[in-house]
Length: 272
Image (cartoon, rainbow, N blue to C red; front, top):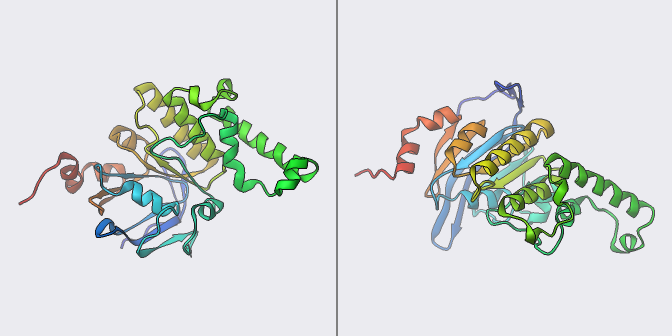
């Protein structure tokens, strides 16, 4: 394995640090089917790391391993240099890992503001009774969390819909609200599962800009799954490619663009 520098500066002036999350020899099985086959890669602090591959490659399964929804049968997950034990998703979230979902998972009957507030649950320390009384520490905590959420709303430019029930919103805005809810958790690692699926060109441009801004202004490390290769090549610092549960490529966008095995996988080329 080639040694990598602890930190480096990108062409646009961003600093990429050491490995934040290290996935080592991950194998995930469902019955007799191997969804992930002995895959290793790292996610470096401050980078935008894309996970790509054809349909059925195992990308979402890998994101579910990272976020604690799936426990691999083999391999180890290291976060901030320490081996992560088997944790439930809410425990992983408390470590500073937030995510969005391939299929939008919002509370349709609740307002945009209330949906985003649910992203602050891990930051609410007051007990149920204190929250009911809403005095002292509970009141201060609620105020601080609302101020944080309002900053996220301003950042993503969704002030005009903050009181609108999510069920009334068009698809593209729902995607932005889901991003807002994840950002409200103040994550160090943000996982985005197909954040631009189903969007038109203008919506994709807006989401791309917000993802870059989140990485640049907040310093948030981002790992994303995306099928639009133009978006991937424009946004990503590094790309890992999966196919039928295997890793077939790992490198910079330029390296992946010229990787013959990756080209063959996307073109469906068969080998005798």
